[in-house]
Image 1 (cartoon, helix red, strand yellow):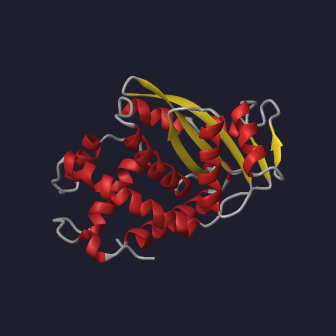
Image 2 (cartoon, helix red, strand yellow):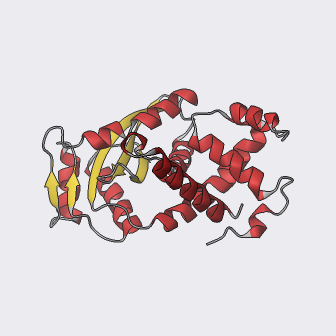
Image 3 (cartoon, helix red, strand yellow):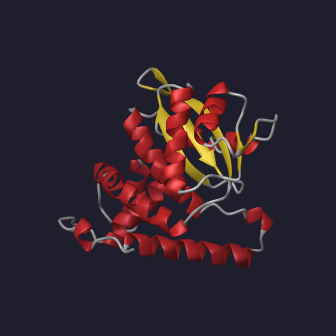
Amino acid sequence: MKTNPNSYRGYRFPPEIISHGVWLYHRFCLSFRDVEELLAKRGILVTYETIRQWCRKFGPEYARKLKRRQGRLGDVWHLDEVFVKIGGDRHYLWRAVDQDGDVIDILVQRYRNARAAKRFFRKLLKGEGSTPWRLVTDKLKSYGAAHRSLMPSVDHNTARYENNRAEVSHQPTRQRERQMRRFKSAGQAQRFLSVHGVILNFFRFARHRMRSENYRLLRAQSLKEWSVATAA
């Protein structure tokens, strides 16, 4: 499960610094210049463009390894789509979260018709390897068409307010979208959000519901998982 050491060959900085820079950028609402300054405070002189290249190369690799470590998520899928402006054109960000609010998968598409919904359903089924126990969406007809075509035996709930969990899950994306002054391309949005969603799962705890010692234990465990996945 460790990252291939050859992945870091030719890089001036060791894996510990590279993975820390990627973690800072995806874990917190920071720009590349913010990460550059935080590293400089610790005596690590690196340009924001280098950090951008780190995130582009290593971010998806880290996310794949973390996703394998987290295993299969919940069996109740909450789906929702939200529009995003990319290059002046309207695109739709399709997102699925489970009953605990963990991001299952995301997909950036130009449309939100039945074809787009089916494509997203296929991506979810391939990634999770099995169908859910229940599907929760709004009343968009595209969901109904994809449901009837790909998983007709699954219970489909479209009741009002039942999908608030998926709608709330878009908030971190909106926050990062503002920080980044919108996404530059559909590919860039897909790459960033795929990594961001996985890392968010590993470091998102219901802190207000647990004792401080339990929170620290979970945080330490997540940081250890990150170190193992990044071979840092």
